[in-house]
Image 1 (cartoon, rainbow over the protein chains, first blue to last red):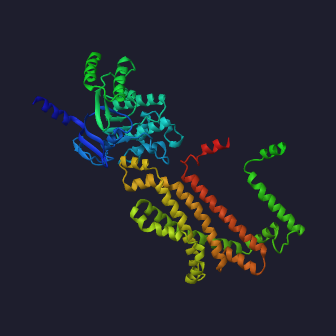
Image 2 (cartoon, each protein chain N blue to C red; image 1 turned 90 degrees about the vertical axis):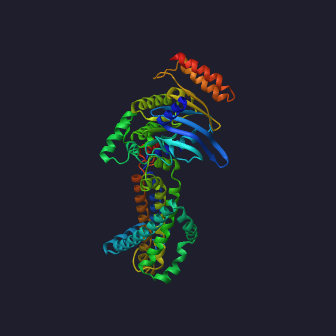
Image 3 (cartoon, one colour; image 1 turned 180 degrees about the horizontal axis):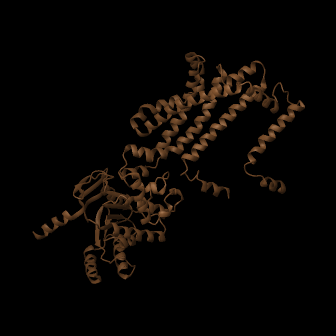
Length: 270
Length: 269
């Protein structure tokens, strides 16, 4: 009884609640019986091989695609269609090439008057360190700078939920690390809920409170990353990274044993 | 050989394109003066210029240019509006496209100048005949390029617009139309070329005023200097409208790396 009550209580607190969700394209089930609860303010990373359905799951949460079965709720109300409280960052920045940097950021604002919009957009650009590039065309920016503009555009409207669809996938290694730190800093500052889809396990461990592994349309692993922030790439970091990576590479490995070990380890590190 | 190349390299870039035409004109003048080309067949450049001055002084030139330009622009506006509106409609509404696109493609394949006999039968040699032909000729390149431009807008940008809650009108104004603009402007340049071509033919065949009329009238009195001058006038007007289109490209496509100042500097260095 007590556990059932606790279960319901945690359900109510969940910001994103995914229950028995199935997504089919024709006959093929891309996502099968997905259960996932994400707390308000939590940073969740979804990892998996390409084609496992991780991006599809993100698109379902975004309301960009419909799902076939199950319930998907955002802040207590069912997701059907695009929610104004949700923002997405795509792998490509998707800036409008015919608008200046600051005007691109303004796309993220609705309703406010023009002067207010400029003020807010400039503030957002300051947060991502591009305050001196506001009047340039996107075509003269580097890939990393474009993604920073896209991040400013996503955050300028102060969304409740930020969905990141491999936003750093096309960037070089140094820019990636820089962007990861920036995203973490802004997440801590603004307190939004974040869901990051990535194929880079190290990135997932660096950023997320919880890493979820999707394998052939099912959740195969759900690991809380108990490392303190800001995260250093030390031995406990490597432990989580190796643990998840091993599981990605050898799908048939016994979960029970590893999970148990991890629990012990997590307790130990705390 | 090497020294010639070096010498040519020293000439500023802006002068280079003018060397060949100036050389040809000089040759033409010399041949005409020496009597190698009969001036009854082809008047010399100086005679053509003299004709130009004469017609400017008696006001005929200005009147002809004014009437022809007016026809060209009115026909262009009508045809351009129809082509643009249809292109937009068919670009965003699949049903409209299914209904009208294949008809448009069929009509497009009829050379519009082939309709001249019919048009004369319908409208006589009134203004409306010329406007009709220009409008018809201009509408197709604008239609095709508007439609193509809308189709080739990056679907990722449209999806982004939807995620950011842009409504249909905003999506059209902020994403689709600017995205289609490079293609629309290509259509505009094509259309301006067709506009003059159509007008030349139409004015030459049937008109009671305008540059084409002036040329045909001069032919009857064997004033070949006026004929050549009319031909040159068309060339100048065509070049001017192309320049106008280029200016629009510079202005509306500033964002495009191809038209930005930075890329032009890079290319030159």
